[in-house]
Length: 297
Ligand SMILES: *[C@@H]1O[C@H](CO)[C@@H](O)[C@H](O)[C@H]1NC(C)=O
Ligand SMILES: *[C@@H]1O[C@H](CO)[C@@H](O)[C@H](O)[C@H]1NC(C)=O
Ligand SMILES: *[C@@H]1O[C@H](CO)[C@@H](O)[C@H](O)[C@H]1NC(C)=O
Ligand SMILES: *[C@@H]1O[C@H](CO)[C@@H](O)[C@H](O)[C@H]1NC(C)=O
Ligand SMILES: *[C@@H]1O[C@H](CO)[C@@H](O)[C@H](O)[C@H]1NC(C)=O
Image (cartoon, rainbow, N blue to C red; front, side, top):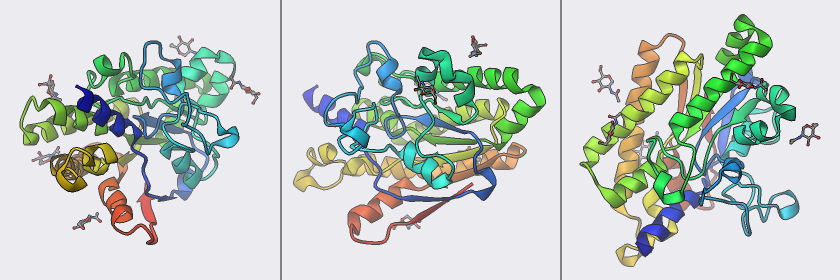
């Protein structure tokens, strides 16, 4: 149990080293909606009662303005901040949905810039880490929260203008690592079945968002989870754990197929898939190299 606890904590703390160069002139200034886990959370979990996955204390945020721990699972910015900075038009990620709800004063103004729904520890599957951390916002609940925001935007702008804005908006995802680590520790099915199950679960969420009006999807797939320090601590000689890394690569390939399928069957579905596995491996294997990646939408 001690090992399980430590290793799963490590997943939550994974920080992407990769630099995204996001080229999206046509979406400049459009709202950005962010879904995901600790790699994208900018304070959601601070607003959850009974949630033990928290980044509201030292030394989180040590390099952030004023050295504040904001709920980002990072020393400074989260991936969500970096992506919106690269997209242009924004200095920081949109605010967490739960923060906007809690202090309603800026809700209607802020939702027109976007909302961040991401919750550290969350997974694509509803049950992932719920018992383990007490309470996290699953992907299903994040989509449900977006449905509420969509209703608020439509009420504000009217149906035609609201739908137009939501079609122009960007939907960014970084989630699945916690499902993978849960699988590694519990193995309730074969690895092949797990990859299909996770992909099918992702498909349900993406289709639901499409039916709510989303069209531009930016998906960040799974990093080499077997290389995070605590996973390496459990292998002989401190090498990366192959089981986790093989699964992360298999998930990337499967997400790639899914997105191709969705874009060929759903009219107007546009996407970009970031290969976080290769990006992170390149940084690990070649730390002094020039790490620039393109992430087109
Ligand atoms: C709401 O917006 C105002 C003006 O930008 C800002 O001063 C205030 O801190 C915001 N409130 C919250 C809770 O973010
Ligand atoms: C947003 O929509 C929800 C659900 O319809 C509603 O309960 C809430 O009051 C709305 N928020 C605002 C600020 O209008
Ligand atoms: C994934 O597997 C779980 C556990 O067997 C099951 O409850 C769930 O319905 C599956 N999800 C999909 C999308 O097939
Ligand atoms: C994509 O579509 C092909 C052809 O219909 C199908 O065989 C495959 O299982 C689909 N893959 C995913 C991940 O949806
Ligand atoms: C990822 O890395 C592998 C191994 O180096 C390589 O074969 C593959 O083409 C790379 N994929 C992308 C999308 O760069």
